[in-house]
Every structure is written in structure tokens, then in C-alpha cells.
Length: 208
Image 1 (tube, rainbow, N blue to C red):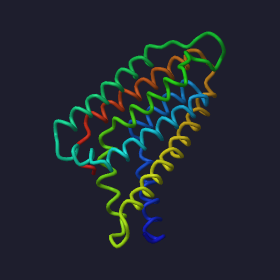
Image 2 (image 1 turned 90 degrees about the horizontal axis):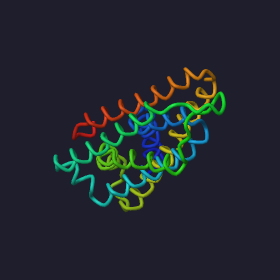
Image 3 (image 1 turned 90 degrees about the vertical axis):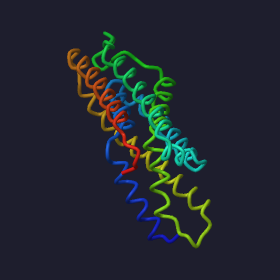
């Protein structure tokens, strides 16, 4: 693989990651309501979820989802239902009267697993690897090392992208001091997650 080919892959990946999807909506929702303390948990969950999707793709799951409408539909609706459940829970939560910036706290462990499940259960992500990575493979070189490099690069860039969104949303969240605004943040966060569920539910079988 030439440096030019790898650089083109990095640029293309950054463009894809910059477009907010269900995972980024989850990251932003938690950062707005939980502050910077949620950033590490969500970012690590996203990283592990992306790694799971990459490994599953390389093991052939992406090919199965790309050819089986039933498998794709099942994974799609499971992911959408989970996002709706999270969104409803956040919408109905109430800020605690413990300080100007505090809302009902969610354990870091739960935040991590929520981020992981939403990322790993996104079938679009799994198929993305199958459809996207081959365009940047040098046919004259060994394929497995190249796939490993490209998959690892995507996970690292995905973690950095999620961190930027999380820290930016946490910064905005710290500016909110009114209890009524905090309640509004919870509802906005819940609405983000339900919107993410709608996006997941409407995913098409193609990667485009």
C-alpha cells in the first residue's frame, strides 16, 4: 500500500465520520446531560463498537448482512428499539437538585455499554467496512495486513471523532445553569436518541 493510497483512505474516513449518525447522537446526548465525565466512557464504547463491527466484517458477517434482507432487518430493528428505549428514559429523567450543573447521574459502566451496543448493532457500519475498505487495498500486496491497518485506522479516527463531539457538547452543557434548561437538555438528548432510532430504522441495504 502506497502512502498516497493510505492518505486518501484517511481523508475519506474523516469525511464519513464527520457526518453525525446514531452513534454520534448518543455521544452528544450523554455529553449534554452528563458532562465531560461521560466522554471517556462513551468514546471507549464507540471504539470497542467500531472494532467489533470491523472484526465482524472481516469474518464475513458483512457479506451475510449484505445478502440477507432478514438478517439486516433484524439487526436494524433491534438497534432502533434500543435507541428508542434509551431516548424515552432520558426524556423522562429529571435533574437532581444537587447543583446548578447536575442532572440525574448515569454510571460510567452503563454509558460505556450503551455506546458500545449502539455502535456495534449498527448494520450500516458493518456493511460499510465490507464496501469501503476494498477500494483502498493494493492488489499486489498481502490483503490481511492491509485490512488490519485500515480497520485499526478507522477505529482510531472514530474514537478521536467521538471525543471531539463529546467534549464540544460537554462544553455547551456546562453553560446551562437554569433547572428548566437542564430539563430541556434531557428532552433534547432524548429526542436525539429517538431521531437516531429513526435513522437506524430507515437504513437501506446498500452502503451508499
